[in-house]
Length: 209
Image (cartoon, rainbow, N blue to C red; front, side, top):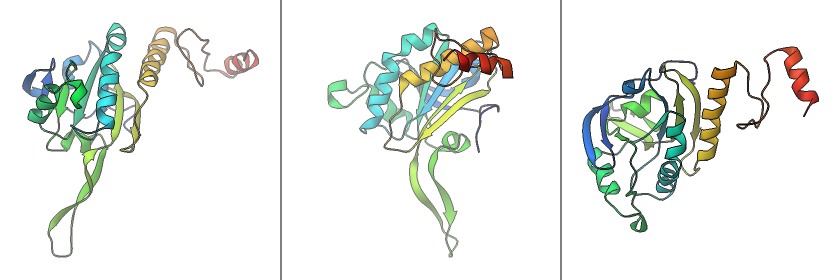
């Protein structure tokens, strides 16, 4: 079930911040009333597609920050594993240089609440508890506004990396909607024409494109 338009599930878990410091009770609530949040899940530390996405978010971090958006990553690894990966050089498959927070969801509760866990627990005929699927997170991305409401979500399967520029486009579109009260049509980008959410507005937009 989609979280769009709903309050973002609570995040209260350990995290590594500033690329080097472990905190025990990291929460997205710290941003309410102050910043929007681009909260993304990735499957696993010390893997292959994941570092490309994590570095890509870091490369665009200044673009998110100048828009007043905090970037926060999460996986089902431990905070110690996050820290070890952050201490590993980029040329050795590490993510040294990443400065935004990485949440450690080792209990898998955050991924479960956001609907991105790539498997689930179940009981067999003998009453034994097992796990079916992969005990990692899909590549879920959630854009959360300053009131803590989810305004956008995408969930990619494990092998499908995401487009970070598209995440920035979503931010720009939301900022435009808030500032101007217009809606953003297909393929809208900053600087392009938006439209009024009326029949006349749609007709005017379509006739000019």
